[in-house]
Amino acid sequence: MKALASFIYFRLMGWKLTGNFPDVRKCVVIVAPHTSWVDFIVGLLVRKIVGLEINFIGKKSLFRPPFGWWFRSLGGTPVDRFKNEDTVASISRIFNSRDEFRLALSPEGTRKKVEKWRSGFYYIAKAAEVPIVMVAFDFGKKEVKISDPVWPTDDKEMDFKTYLEFYKGVEGKIPEFGI
Image (cartoon, rainbow, N blue to C red; front, side, top):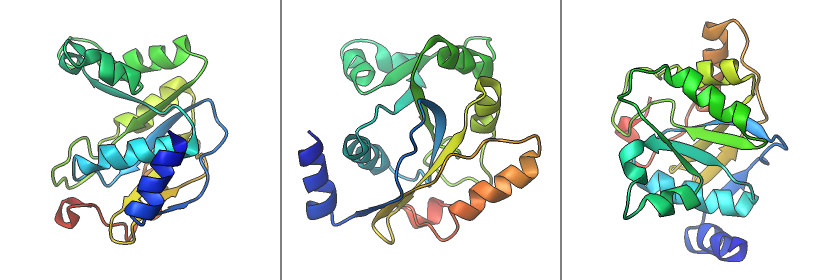
């Protein structure tokens, strides 16, 4: 499957991959900009190329029949977003219950235009005591860029400046939806 994913990504699509996924067993992976459903396909290809399981969370209804088995096989974990529960604590428990868990999230929280990122990924990383790995999907340059792991500090404002700097100049599939 890695050979097929590489062929599609590098040869057919003509994309490049910059950086190496760090050798960490647990982390929060923030992927931006998230402007289209195509991002999911690009992410699946890159995940096969780097050869690591990278997980995602989704609304509980996605994991019901007939497609629930497929989302789980792709590394998905259901989360009940409507239950009166602290989502950060719930996801932190998932990290604590597994030996390996790399959680990919969109800091925008949606594919639509947003004025600022949501901060859940930051608080999840802090609660789970794991680093953040930044991944940029740059459709303008046809490139996926991967950062080294960055540990969140107690200075949220400075941390967010670091994150946003990594994504500076990156163009999403729908450029007007990017930050």
